[in-house]
Length: 297
Image (cartoon, rainbow, N blue to C red; front, side):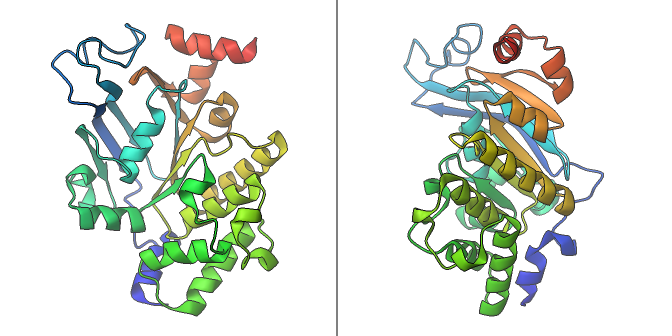
């Protein structure tokens, strides 16, 4: 195993942040689609029940989103479709650039420089070494026409692993942990069930030993029994390896199971934030109350 291969695995401590600080801090994250105008933020949001600016037609996908994530902890983002929660993840992972705001990752420049200010080469390195992403649709996170082991290897190669035996050992270990039969390691995921595809995607996201894993509606469309199995596996690995997670879901059951703290979004804005149990048992914002009551009714 090369030096870069050793430092990729967080259990060795090489890339783990100071346990007394925040692994990720997001400040004022805003994403607009369109040219924007001075009135975009004033004319959109929960009060107006829209994220489309009536003056210029721009879409305010999210605005002034701020939060902190501690090492080994899990933060949930909940809200209806179009609330902006997926946009937050995709900006953090580098799938799209934000319009404004900052995000500080302790694994990058000691948390002193925003990852949004990084140049393209640095952003690729942040993505390849320090972050993991699990998309709602496995087709976004996997190449369905290369083997499940090959998908994990692809991630490891991006993180500068070079020894074939080490790559194959790591892939086999992760796929085994995700309950993928090892005799299917060399088969393509195109013929796997949706639950198996998601588990391969989780193995791929964990391969580089990330400090933060971003999970976007990963149980959506899965059978309830399959959901439970996937969530249990993620919880087990997260507790063992101390990975911080940011979980986007519209399912309050998933949020309750996985997340210590939760933020609630509507029309691109954060309307409530706090301890998950408090938010779900005693919601303060009318929209959060509506979300909780719709589940309990």
